[in-house]
Length: 499
Image (tube, rainbow, N blue to C red; front, side):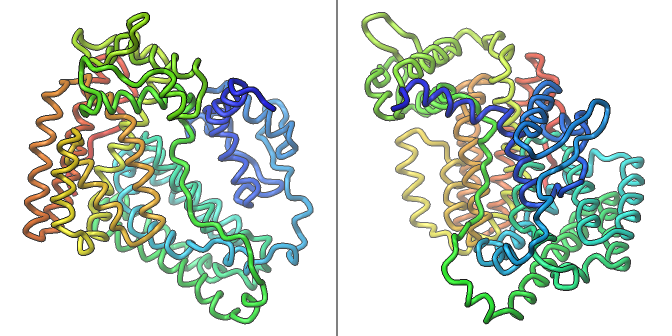
């Protein structure tokens, strides 16, 4: 039987940035997005897409080569060698894909609702030269087959999203893109649902869509991009409706609901536990001066080794959220000597900060559409009761209100996305303490009460804007703190304006 410590070590390694990039590329190769004979982006491009070092990219490519997925030569792009024998379409056809992916139409609708705003925010950082490049690429794509056209448009959208410097936008897009993808090897070109969407005329329509981002008038962007995703969903549904008997013959298959692994960048169990404890200290669940649970209790609660718990305690001591007294245990406290500058010298914490800011920006941009989906389903009395209960526990009102929105989102993929975003925010709130401590939290509590007022008068737009304003305020505060302490990358994650 594997020793507990060794099992944890393997578990932690699986969540490193190396594994994040490796798994992402592997998913794209096995799904057919990066097909046999196709070239991977250059090493420099991969560094930009995944926000990792050249060394990490080099290690990932070496591992993919060793595992038989790609071939690399010095000074040449890596080439996919997996899937040479995928030509037997009888083994896996389009009906198999549709029957397995039970959320495919809801994912398309989620993309129609969320992606236009992500594109709009990102496009604000695109130059005139960028748009000329995108237009030329789409012109070339119009001359290609279904697979080639898809790769061109996908590359354009990825490049636009990358301009935002947000660590989550491209990751989410890749996740949804892979889930909705109909692999070209799953059917003939004549059978493929998207065969009519990649005509030259349709591709010129795509040029107009991308050019709308140059004008960046949000209502226009939302209409054009939402229509694209809904057309794609309609094409797939039309194909599905034409094959009722064939699908019924498939029997029971493994079903795969949409899942977004937004936390795969997080790399250590002990930092996860440390963040959880800091949140409880900051919200008052463990008041300053009180003893946090014993090492044995934390071992049982998190199912980890004693060594991992002690690393988490050391993290709390280092950041000023706890003081360990030999023979007596670890006591909660709030930072009282300013910010420990050496904190941001560690890559783990710098990535924590940028990921937290990315989640804040994402929430500020997207909470509005989520509210409009959920608002009519929110029970005012239940929400007010929950606010009172959570207030006694020290929970932030904005957190309670956001959780209420999330649980009432009717689209399961959208609910999944916001659940993962909120989890990232919950684990990053400790960074908010470093700016103003409890004073900033009190300001945020007051700001959140305005959202409750709009909920009471049934004003969905006002409610959405107050929540978005709250997240913009937190992002602005954390960004100021980050820049003050030399994290220049934080300046690239802009505080969005109100929509």
